[in-house]
Image (cartoon, rainbow, N blue to C red):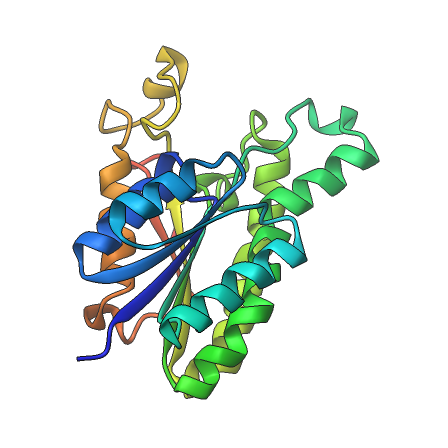
Length: 233
């Protein structure tokens, strides 16, 4: 039986790390990129491949993809996680911080996809899952750069899905609400109809489903996992 291979970027902690653990439990061999070194430690624990580097570096991402291919010869799933971008009142954000936000929340997907999409097309199979945010559909003044660039990511995802669906290569976004990977604040929890923060394990379970054959007819979509914060169709 051919091994299933997953890459997780920004996977050293938080939702990215939980996604890596869940995919490993599902039987995937995992390759993890993180800037802290935690990804290497987690990959060793999971019997996978770890690279210390940044998803803002084309060179680091190429190393990750090249070493994954050298070791296993295929890539079945790419999970794109992210760090945290600038926050400020929307009219006060500098040019430099808007550019940084684009790096963190949009180009973090574009860069690895450019490397992985040709591999998946040649395989005639592959799944790309981007960890986005509820603010992509309900812009939030607390998270302005995330809101703007993740709305752009939703458009990019649809364009990608349109181009690659016939090749059996899918892309979807997961839109978490307030998740327990960050310190809980009453002001945020009180906005959630379910009355609690989401658990990182719940995000990982959604990613697991989207990576599975059961989601084989889902592409170009943004899946909200936010406890009911967003309600529009």
